[in-house]
Length: 240
Image 1: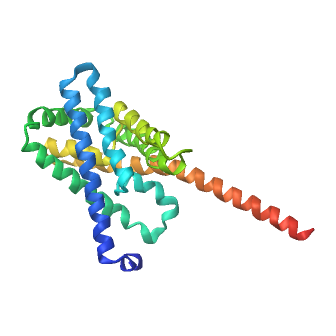
Image 2 (image 1 turned 30 degrees about the vertical axis):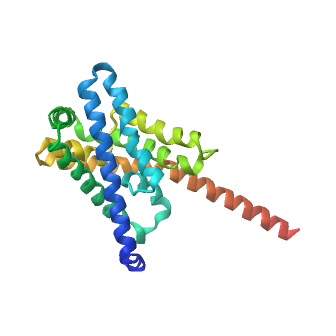
Image 3 (image 1 turned 90 degrees about the vertical axis):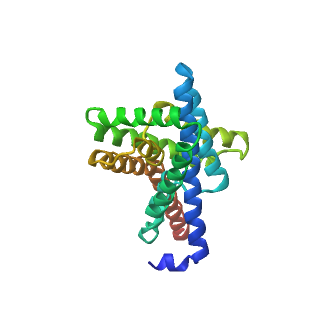
């Protein structure tokens, strides 16, 4: 593609490495969340959700490349730039896999892996799992867009922006909505591949895309409506 040719080899390498690091941070956040759920009882889910938000906060702060964050750019991305999405997702799942390998060989293996297996096994065993995955992922995609765009739209670039980045993540993690990249950590711990696993991944990816583009699409329509109104006003002025 022409755009890939326009991007230098170093820029392409940096893009991919930032995607890997993004997945690495999601893996760390997911590990902390699973550990909290395993050890802290009733409060584990809430504390785990707060701990998971560290991953997204680091990603937004350091400009790492996260698939579920990039889908918000689809309305303005153009077909020539779509190649970035699968490349980013591939980098993300490599980063998550690195964390999974490290956790497997660390003292955290027993509680974290067991909790991860239990979490994903329950989702796969549920009735109408495909529909549930898709709908849950839509809600997650919506909240992730609110989070990653917070730094752009927050009224002040300080504590308020940080809260706006973190709060949607805490909500989706607490509710257990499906994040296609974070889910990969659970599937790595599950240690098996089946059509149901592949289908679940596909449905969560599609749901994240649908949920992630809703707000950007509305904002794009708003911008176009404003531009049309200004153009009409300018035309009227010229006719006077």
